[in-house]
Image 1 (tube, one colour):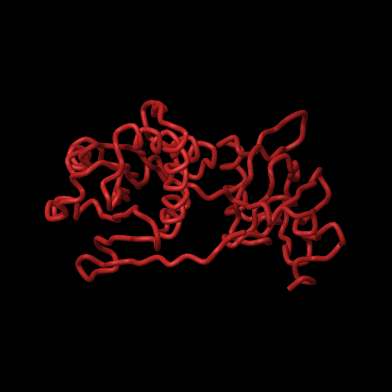
Image 2: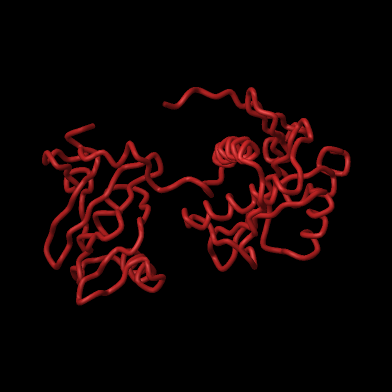
Amino acid sequence: MKFGKTIKLFLIDGDPSGRLTCELSNWTGLAYRIPRTEVKRCKDRSNLNSTGVYMLFGRSEDADAVYIGEAEDVYKRLQDHLREKDFWNEVLVFISKDENLNKAHIKYIENKLYEKAQTIKRYKLLNGNIPPMSSISESDRAEMDEYISNLMMIVNTLGHKLFEGLKDSQEMESDSIFYIEGSRGAKAKGVQTHEGFVVLKDSRIATTVVPSYSERLHAKRNFLIESNEIAIIDGEYVVMQDILFSSPSAAADLVTGRSANGLTEWKNINQQSIRDLS
C-alpha cells in the first residue's frame, strides 16, 4: 500500500531552472539539483563538502546518459567532473542532514543505484566500472534501503525516470493488457502507462509494411531494428524489450505496418478497446 508524501522544494536563487534543494517529510536525506553552470557557485553550500552520492545527467550519442558516483567530499568531486566530463548539464546530489552517511554507506548506495539503473535501461550508463558493493551490517542495510527508496522517488520527482520501469504491477493486471493481431505476422500485447503506451517484450510486429507507410514510420521501424530492440528471428520480427510509444496509435502503427487507430485496435482479454474503456 502506498501513502501520500510531502516534498518540499526550495529555489536557492529564486529561479525554477536554477539550484534547488528537495526534502521529504520525516526523512533525514537532502537532495540538491544543480545545473552544471551553477556548480562553482555552490562553494557557499557547506553541507556539499560532506559524504554523499550523485548522478550526472546529460546526453551521449543522442541518448539520455548518466554517471552515478559517490564521494566523501561531493563538492570537490563535482569540481573534478567539471574538468573531466563534458556530457552532463545537471547533477543531483544526495547527502544526509544529520551527517550520518559514511564511506561504506555511500558505496552500498552507489552499487544499488547502478544495478537498478542497469536493469531499467532508461539511460546510458557512463560508469567505466561496476561500483563495488561494500559490506555493512543488516541494520545498516535496512536503513540504506529505505534511504534508496526515498532517493529514487525524488529523482523521479525532479524529472529523471532513471529508476522508473516502463510499466508497474498494477498496469500488468490481465484486463489492463491490450492485444493486436493482424496480417503479415503482427501479434503484440501492450499496456497504457502515464507516459504513453508500452509494447511488451516478445510481441511480434508485421514483417512488411504497406506502400503508404510514411517515411517517419519507416525511420522509427529501422531504428528499432538497428538498435536491436526488434530482432529478426526465424523470419519473425520480435520485440526484444519493452518499448515506449507516445500513444496507442503510434504503437499500433509500428506493430501493424500500416496506419492504425490504437484507441479501437488495441483490445483487452474481454475484447474491449481502449475507447470502450474511456
